[in-house]
Amino acid sequence: MKALLLENIHPDAVRPLEDAGLEVVQRRSALGERDLAAAMSGVALLGIRSKTQVTDAVLAGAPNLLAVGAFCIGTDQIDLAAASARGVAVFNAPYSNTRSVVELTLAEIIALTRRLTEKDQAMHAGRWDKSATGAHEVRGRTLGIVGYGNIGAQLSVVSEALGMRVVFYDTADKLALGNARRCVSMDELLEVSDVVSLHVDGRPSNSSLFGEKEFSRMRQGALFLNLCRGFVIDHEALRHHLVSGHLAGAAVDVFPEEPRSAGEEFVSVLRGLPNVILTPHIGGSTEEAQADIGAFVGAKLADFVTDGATPLSVNMPQLALPPASGSHRLAHVHRNIPGVMAEMNSVLAAHGVNVEAQLLGTRGDLGYALTDIGVDYPEDAVDQLRALSPTVRLRVLS
Ligand SMILES: NC(=O)c1ccc[n+]([C@@H]2O[C@H](COP(=O)([O-])OP(=O)(O)OC[C@H]3O[C@@H](n4cnc5c(N)ncnc54)[C@H](O)[C@@H]3O)[C@@H](O)[C@H]2O)c1
Image (cartoon, rainbow, N blue to C red; front, side):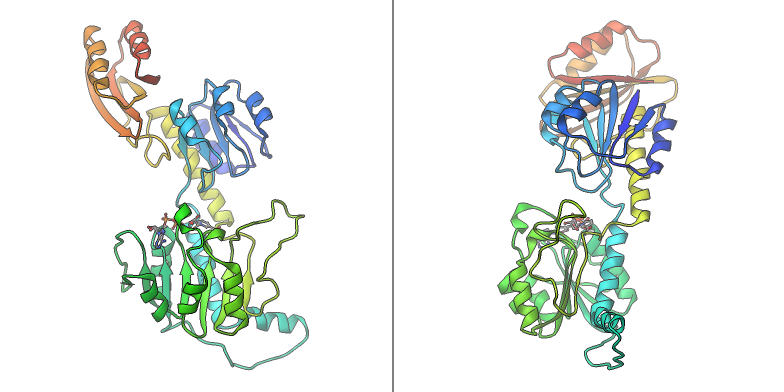
């Protein structure tokens, strides 16, 4: 079986795939739709990052494809519905760069609170200004975290270790970690926070979540950070509140429109403002995160190939059976309709095949069953299972 890894995926991805018996082919660049379709012949696993589009047409021309690994966080570049319809599992790395984002956020909170970039720029311009005016400690200040998911919760724990008070607001029920206090509304959070940091996800309803009204409710002299998604804030409104002196500073890592390549100019109304840190969407970009993503997604793909395991898959029902010795495993992707398991087990029983372990999971229109059977089974039984009308894909794993 062949694994094709595009977009210069970290070498830590290769070992688990080779250990699972795959021949790994690596390419540095992304491929356009036509070139990708041509390259898919005989490919069982495809690894991509954010630039390669895995379209319905690419999937249609890749009958051997078992799974796609997105060696990044987002999976917008993959037609998930088309992948699911073909029983192609999709995996990503939801946690691998969480810590990297948290560390950049903390660094920026301290840098903004001390007005560090201004001091740095003055020194590079030959100006020696030792004044303490406007420079503060973060200890004792209140950090308001909007979105208490993987990143928000981790930020909560680490910033408390620096002596900050933490409040948070999340639309979902979340366990408050450490001494963090949950706010019942975003307004409550804005009223009490010296620093507001956004860490919500990219659901469409979060578009323009933070605009004139929300900035106006922030405390005089407060700091604002956005390292989640560009479209959640109104940059004109943020500029207005910085220029007026209502807000003391801001750090922004994500933008509604970002340059597609290094040569393209970065255009923003936030450019040139004092005590505003602008970074080119690098919250998660560390060598540690890249290595972790490589190893994490590589292992997920390898486990799926060898054991049929799908925990943390983006599109498949999530299940795993412990690796079985002395048996074969049937990995059966099927349409989620009544009676499939009964049909399947009748076929096995009619051929005298004993079921040693079995697990079923469903997700939307898709069902997935792992069934361990003895090593001696008639091929005819497998042919009949493949021919069942709800069957999307059947693999026999040894
Ligand atoms: N800057 C970067 O390089 C970088 C890197 C990684 C992740 N991110 C972004 O950071 C964000 C957070 O990532 P995560 O892994 O913590 O996601 P997550 O899904 O674990 O957490 C998001 C949280 O936001 C909450 N939420 C959603 N909408 C909300 C709203 N309107 N008000 C309050 N809470 C709301 C959700 O309930 C959830 O708890 C995502 O948007 C992700 O794309 C950016």
